[in-house]
Each structure stands twice: as C-alpha cells, then as structure tokens.
Amino acid sequence: MSFSIYLIGTIVAVIVFILIGIIAGRKVKNTNDYYVAGRRAPVILIVGSLIASFLSTGAFLGDTGEVYSGFFMGIVIVGIMQSLGYVYGATLFGKYIRRSQANTVPEYFGMRFASNRMRKLASITLMFGVTAYLLSAIQGVSTLMTSITGLEYKWCVLIAWASFTIFTVYSGSKGVLITDTVMFLVFLVAALIGIPFVVKAAGGWNTAITELAQSVTRPGIISWTNNLDYLYPTGAENLVWAIVYGFVWAVVVMVSPWQTSRYLMAKNEHTVVRSSIWASIGVATVTMSLYFTAAFVYKINPDLSDASSSIIWAAMNVMPVLVGVVMLTGILSAGISSASTFLSLIGSSLTNDVFTKYRDTTEKKSLTVSRIGMAIVSLIALALAFFNPPQIFWIMYFGGTVIASSWGIVALASIWSKKMSELGAFLGMLFGFLGCVIPKSVSALMEVTLPMYLDPFIIGMVLSLIGLLVGNRIKKPTESDIERYERLHIRPESECNAIEDRKTHKLMYVYILYGVAIGLFFIFAYALPYIKALK
Image (cartoon, rainbow, N blue to C red):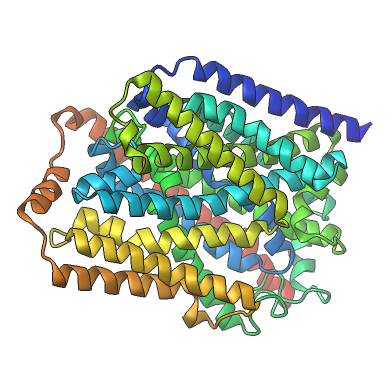
C-alpha cells in the first residue's frame, strides 16, 4: 500500500509541474519573455526560483549523504557560509547586472567589455559548469525514482529527463520561475513537517545529540573534527576544507549564472535585494534542518548501504505515510526545479550568446531556434546521465568549483574595478577555468585526493587573479570601458524611491535578527548538549 501511495504521489507531482509549465508557456510571446520573464517578476517568484534552483537533489541526497557518513560539521559550515553569499551577491553584483538590461549573464560580460569573445567564453564556461550541475540533478531525481518505483535506474533517467524537459523547452524562464516557486513551497513544507518525526524516532533532540556525540561506530560524526576516517585524517584539514568550500559556495551563490540570472528577471533593484535576503534565510533554514535530520537518521539506522538515501529511507520508514509522500515529493521537486533552471540557462545561453546570428531574426523564428537549441542540450544531458553512474555530491561540487574559479574574481572586478580591461577579464576567466578543470579532471582520473593547498578551486582562483592582473598590465582599459563601468554605477531615476529604500533597510534588520537566532540555536541546541555529553 505504501509503495503505491509513494508512486502515485510522484506521478501526480510530475504531471502537475508539466501542466503548470505548459500553461505558463502559452503566455510567452517573445524572447524577452522566454529569457527573462519580461523583467516583471516579484519577490516571491525570485525567492522561490533562487532557492529551488540552488537546493537541488545535491542538498537532499548529496549533502545529507555526507552528513550521514560523518561529515556533519563540515557540511554545516559550508551551508552557513553559502547562505551569506545571497546578500553579498545581490548588492555587489546582482543589481548591477540587472541594470545592464542583458538577457543572460554571458551577454552582460559581452556588453560590459564590448567583446564578443568574452561573451562566448562566459557562455562556454557556463555550459560546462551548469551541465555538470544538470547531470547531478538528473541523477538525483533518477535515484529517488528508483528507490520509490523499483524500476531500473536507466528507465528512471528517461522519466526524470522528460519530467522537466517538456515544460522547460516550451515555456523558458517564465515557466521555470513559476514551477520553481511551487516546488520550493512543496519541499519547504516537506522539510518542516517531516523533521519532528525523525527527531522523535531518534529518541528526542537531547538524547540524539548525546548518543551521536558518544558514538563508537562513527566517532566524531557531529564533532568539529568530523569523522576522521572519511575525508582527511585530521580535524584541522577537515576544518580547512569546510571553510574553503564554504567560501567556494558563497562565491557560487554570489556570481553563478543559475543564481544571478534570476535577478535579470526581477521587476526592480529593490526586488533583487529583498529576494536575496529571503533566499538566504530560506536556504539556511532548509539546509540546517536537513543536516540535523540526516545525523539523526544515522542514530536511528546506522546500517544504510547507500548514505545518500538517508532522507529517502526516513521518509519511507520513519514518517507517517502521508508525510513521507510530501517529503519524497519535495525532494523530487527540488531536483526537477533545479534541472529545469539549468536546462533553461544552457539553452538560452547557447542560442542567445553562441549562435548570435539568430538574434536579429523575427521573434517567432528566434523563439523556435531557442526551443530547438534547448531541446538539443537536453538530449546531450540525457546521454551523459544515461551512461554515467550516479555521483551526485561530487559532480555537483565539480560544477560549482568550475564556475567559482572562472567567474568569481572577474565578475566582481567587472563591477568594482575601473582598471579592468577586456584582456584582463578574458584571461582571468580563461585561466580560472583551465586552472580548475585540468587538475580536477586529472585527480578524478587518477583517483587521488590532492592536498588541501592544491585544491583545484584554489589553483583556479590564483590563476584567475594572475590572468586578470597580466591582462590589465598588457592592455589598459579604453575610455569606452571606463564609460561603461561608470554607467553601471548610475542609479536609474526609476529606482530612486525613499519609501522603498526604507522598506529594504528594515528587511536588513530582520536578517540580522535571524542571524542572531541561528547563533543562539547552535549554542543551546547543539554546542551545550554536545559538551555536556562528553563530560
């Protein structure tokens, strides 16, 4: 009976998402609607899409799998640091690229430096990094469907692919924004109502914390050192890894195309900033809830053969059936929403930034080309997912580090450095991309773990900075470069509204209070019970 209910819930969710996307697609009249939803999206849609596109199955299956394996505090540090990236990203980068009126983030780079090669390089790096992320999302949804239905993994890949491709290709960003928001609400409810049942099954909050702190089978599972048999053999190395990758994901949230492209759709700059605050609060709340849940699942059942299935197992074995259905639907929603966003990004960039000759054709032809391009990209992603075994967590981290290394420094410098030249931006992005991809690929093929100081992200960031400095040294910015820079820092008159400014400033105080609340929660619900358990 339970199996049937879980399966029915999954089927209903997929059908609903497809129908919503198709209905939204009927309102798409031109490429402005298709790429940036007409630049009229309110806060609720931007927040929903920001969170849903970020919290993919990588969070529900990949991150929680790492926590279950004993890397709780490492993932918690990454989670907290990455959530801060929203506010910094919106205020330092997001509202300025919206001001540029670009249709895609690669187009922004091309406009900022009046450079077609810069636009194409940004598009290529986008497609490389986001395809890895898309692959992770497809594999996550397929893994979930396999657990629920019992079907062979490859058949589930086909179903997962169809579940987001149909409405994404048809409706573009307009459909993605709406479905993302619906999916975000589903998995938010799932996370909030499902966790208490896991806590209860683990013996209650304080009991679970005490027994995990005293764990013999997986020592250090919730300590600052983490489980020393999992990644690095010392607590210091694991802590450094967490801080480095916390910074990586903060940068990803600040500049990555699947986040910042949402700001291009916002109706004004206040929407950008307010959305980033609520997105930061939402991501922190959901991820912290998931990470504690995964640790408590280990307390309940330490013998799972597949760590990434910890939340799935809890939904099907610990929670009441109806709650479990909502939880699994939430995980499915997270994966589908992210996959739709990634596919939309890749397809839009391919047709808008690479095959630029179609930009000046009729709107009808341009829309058709955009949809065909997106369909081709989806078939490539399908092939990659079909013939590669699931590696949800590490594929996701690969895509994230590639974008952070190649885009991070260049994106922020394009807004805040008047001395930035086109050559500096080009070499910075190129060196950062190659500096991350090459060592990451070599270490994966040779199956070796590089020392923390030789992490591909660090290599990529250093080389990106070198490329930027060398390029700026060889070629100084032109007067036109400086003029475009200065134009970005002129606030449009339409954005100058004292009442709206005060509303945004008040929301910042709410964000500060939330930060204080999170700090108090960790002190009284985690640190003090943990210390008491070790006495």
